[in-house]
Structure formats: structure tokens, C-alpha cells
Image 1 (cartoon, rainbow, N blue to C red):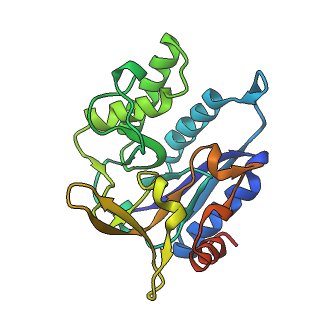
Image 2: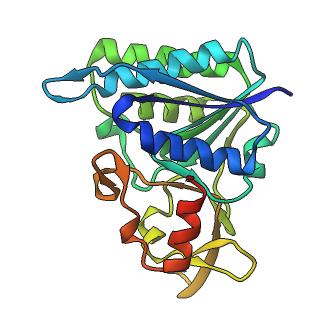
Length: 241
């Protein structure tokens, strides 16, 4: 099955995006990375999120004519281990968001999906997301329209997979624990997350970190200074070089 990673970015995020690409290439040097550079398209002095999400969906749809599997990775992400779950047999692979968004925000009850990492092996499934995004935009533009459209498709589609596991993590589910990441002797970057029902630590291997939100950014670059463990911070940065 032919596979490609892809991302979309504008020139202001070039350095951060290149770091993400370098990290992916560190682990998967033989898999193509399709990086679409778009021009600056701000609205009222702010980043044009609507246009950006449209570019992501349109580009992914075109890539599914060329590849059997596409893997979208947000530019503010870093791959820090092998990610075998991205290559399993499913139509749509998604990660859970770090906070819920209920129907009052256009989301749904239960698991709510984040758009920062998405795997697709079915063009019809991607078209579902694209059409739902267009539908929501025609009704009313909202910053969560892309994420809500992806969330809707995930819950509608038979053959969707949630990429959440007890011993490893992708995406931003574990974002709140990134500051305390640690480097283990075998070279894995690990997170310690409390299991509140048991009051016991739950160690998770960090496979892909998504530094979403303004807290982790300085001038369109990831602010690694928030990571307390020097060895883990140094290793993570090395993957971006």
C-alpha cells in the first residue's frame, strides 16, 4: 500500500514545519512527505483558519488519487518514536481531543476528535469530511468546523479507528503532561499520567507530540523551554534537526 505523510503551512511557520518534517523523516525516511506551502491569507489581522482547513481537506483529497494511505500531521507536531498504529487496516484513524466539545459547540457527546493527526485510506471517507466541512461553513463559519466535521465523520463511518492506547500516545490527549516528559534508558520519551480511579501512575510512550495552542508557541515556533527534563528536551529537539 502506497503511503505519504502530508502537511499544510504558510511561510511564517516554515521553521516549525521543517522541524516536524525532519522528525518524521528520522523515523520513516523512505515514506514521501507532501508539504503544501500556502501564501499568507489573514482575515482582520488574524490567521485565516477557514482557508487553511479548506487547503488541508482539498490537498488530502487530491493525494488520495496518488496514494492509498495519507497521514496528515499538523506543523506544530514532532514525531519522537516509531508509530506503527498509523499503518493498521482501517479507513479513518483519528486521535481524541484534549478537551471535549459538546453539541452546543457543534461537536457530539462522548469521544471528541482532534484534527491535528488524521490517517485515511478511503477517498469516500475523506469526501465525507470535506462535504461536512462545506455544509457547516455554508450554515455558519465557526473555528471548530473542520474538527467538528472530522468528529462527525469518525462517528458516522464504519471502519474508523481511535488511535488512543493505554501504553502509548499520539496527538494532544496527553498535552497537559508534556512539560514533565522524561527520557528512559532505552531511549523512549515517556509521560506519567495519573489514573485517577486507581491513584497509580500510568506510563505512556510518547510517539507523536502535538504542541497545539498558543501556550507552546513563540513567534510561530515551539517553545521547548517548558519541558523540564533536560535530556528529554534535548532528544526531542534533535529529532527536528
